[in-house]
Length: 480
Length: 71
Image 1 (tube, each protein chain N blue to C red):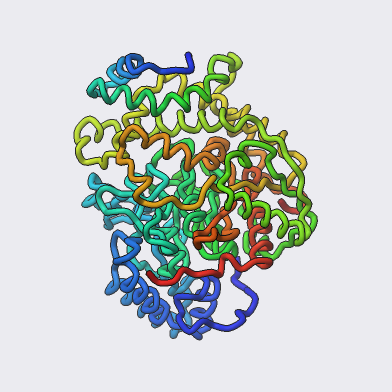
Image 2: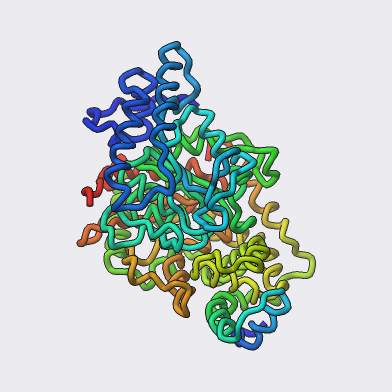
């Protein structure tokens, strides 16, 4: 993959405000040093971390030393990779040998990793500089951004509101321009939810496209890894680096990785986008419904053909998704749940306990149905290139109203928020959540474009073309 | 399986799975997972005899092959 982008209209005075692509290009061209980019991000982190709580660990000295090394190498003509000297931070669940990955937990707070995440290693091999580790929901098991051990992450658009989770720090840090991009994971909506609530672009990948080796597991059937960034183009760059077969994760597909950056140059003309005739358009917050209508109009103006599409019963998919997630998460956590239940936050512990009540036969039926369910979905979308739907029925709720702390209403609240994301996880489909508008009170609204398995290039084509027609992804929250 | 999981059902299954929880937790757990189980109940018990989980990959993986003219 080569990085050859359109010239920027004008470099921002603050290098942290550049997109990932712009900053990477500027560093490699010698227009911006890695130290300048890193200092710019660190300055914003120092200023905004107290209000946002987007980071679990901040490592300024190590980051600046790495930036200086990157600059020195570049001065000698050595370019490590596409993202040489670019400062980034990621969700704190991608293992790096010799470092602690807390996974947002008390249980792993001091555990040093003995392996390297393949996805993270591939990004690092492109030359990036580590800024620190981003906030996440404890063990990635929650959609809001609450964390009993590290405190809640706060939404940069309104700090009284949730960021979405579980990639809470990834959403908040990208939105607030604390990092140029971030890795996240999505098992029930954990990339798309913070992308939607924080007004950034989030790409949930097809099950099997990106290696999960060395990444904290939540549900081995449903887990996916993907990028959050300001633009689709930035996500395409990160995905291109990460995607592809990995002998350490035998579930990865061996097919060649497409040129995702080239896909970002594509147009909407010639594409057909389906709008579901039920489920995803039911019981929407009026502001989400308005944004959906406006987005459909924009896509039409851009040349896409819009048609109505009837999808199979999404409630069944949602139920199956819940069964698989609950059982697999509980099985992985059983030893700790038996030995040290007090070390979990209340909401996570209560969700983990749920999985113990699901009969094994029901779990296996949910796994066995996955093939026929995907086949039925593919038949339903045979005439469209992608499906457009809201990422969630509502904009970001407040931290207070979702702070159920594992009480009786916790599961209902979680199910309501993740209603539109869970079916996609069950089918293992790729989806990009795009910033598509704002509420009257200034909260972002994201919509998801859902593709066929391994059709990330099509989603990138649609998303990048949409972002050339709109400027929602360029909007930045005022500093709290 | 019935669409409703009682707290007694939940308590028994949880005990069999090796977790010791107070009865009050069983009620909370039953109400938490019942909607998902109810949604899936229309599928449970209807699947063909020879269907196995790997069918998912059999359906999914052909989509990964490059298509003529790109994806």
